[in-house]
Amino acid sequence: MVFWLWTGIALLAFFPIAVGLFLAIAYLYVRWKYMGFLTRIFQEKPLFVVPRGEPDPRAEEVSIPAADGLALRGCYFRTSAPERRGVILFGLEFGSNRWACRQYCQALIEAGYDVFAVEPRNQGESERDPNYEPLQWVTDRDVSDMRSAVSYLRSRPDADPNGIGIFGISKGGSTGLLIAASDPWVKCVATDGMYGTHTTMVPYMQRWIQIYSGNRRIQKALPGWFYGMVGTVGVKRVARNRGVTYPSVEKAAAKLNRPLLMIHGAGDTYIKPEMATSLFARATGTKKLWLVPKAKHNQALHIAGDEYNRMIVEFFDRHLAEESRELVPVG
Image (cartoon, one colour):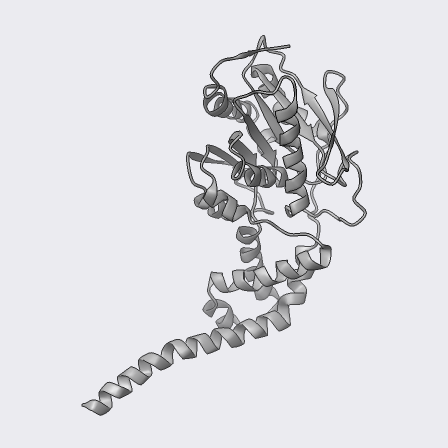
């Protein structure tokens, strides 16, 4: 009886040790064999058409200083409505210029909102940082530059004392979420095509290993958190080599305690809907996810049109304008 008791205890102790040993060996193997693929693919730039707008004489041309003194170029559109209902900071997608905000924000401008868009460093006509090469992933530089834009809006003579809203596309949406999660002056945030690093990287890693490895048993045995752990090491290596840090959009979503409208293309083959759903599930507070049928990445506006504009305006009407104590007369 005592023998079988100690045998059972030994087996119970051996099982977690065996699992831990297997995962440790698998971690070292995957890191040795596939880390090069991960760091290379992580740094590849996406291949899609980036919208650019033309200069608009109705906008106020603005140049603001970044935290390290670089000049960032922006444009400020005043509402064409009789009364201003709020101020919205627009986050640009990777590679576009400040004038691209007009197609996304025309309905907001007509509905009573001032809109400000600013180009981060090394994008559009903003000054270049010779030690920085931006990618589609949000870095500490992007967050710092958007914080400078928020500071500028707070310092304007016509600043709204009640705060601002953020509306961002793709990378600009991810950056906006990071700002909204830590700055109480940002009252709400709407995004289109937003993505995180972890929730995007892990599904792609699983796909890459399927391509480069024929061992299906190992692929099925490894849990999702295992890929996340390996990916985190790879991202840190890339960050170190490029002299940046990659803040966690997922952690920011978990800390967000203000309204979020998240729009995403149901036909997005770059940031797939399940990636967006995974990120959305982490968000706290009042939130809504709208998956636009047939829309590719950042193409929801072109597919949904009037419905898209209506939903954006209604979101800011409810969570920004109605939160203000009074309407601010234009001018």
